[in-house]
Length: 258
Image 1: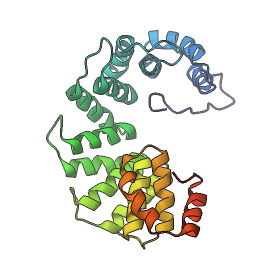
Image 2 (image 1 turned 135 degrees about the vertical axis):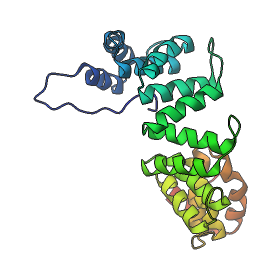
Image 3 (image 1 turned 60 degrees about the vertical axis):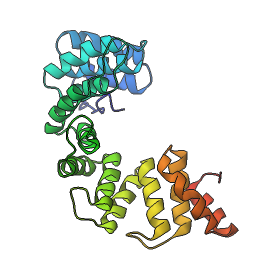
């Protein structure tokens, strides 16, 4: 979950780590118990615990969602220089909430601060904001730099974004083969937009060998994952296949045809 750090197991020879105990409880689904374990750590100044408590109040995990309380805890973590806390606070300011006014400019500043510390999820979001150009001037070259760092760290949406950059020649020379390669990486990690774009590339033979069956299989996965990018291609790809091809695409996708 983006709001929380990944669990890192402590060596068996050491006493139980309260933070890791809380994370284990959280991952077991007992959010309220995790909050009880984090609270004394957070009050003692543990930025990771502060960030995780803030995330729970932001998402309503174990407690009713309360953006104002989330802001309080996340501010503490962010002020301590904790990158996930900066990123989580940025996410809160990006969307706003009851009692917390949306502040995209501050969100961008916080995403940058976390990105500069190597937080891959922040790098992904900051690259997106640089590409959108709504809060700051669009900067495709800088967007590519951050997206590539996030992609190499395994963040699937940034892999898809890298494909878009190469396909549209934004900050890089146009290279449809590299675009398709990045889309495949994102698609294989489950990014619905990456699946849609890979399906489109396979349909048109853009950067990859044309394969209508594989194209439809990826487009069906993308549609199931909520990508609106799949919609324009589904009809033409279906029309290009016979019944056997349609059945094979459905089998590969593991989803029924709509």
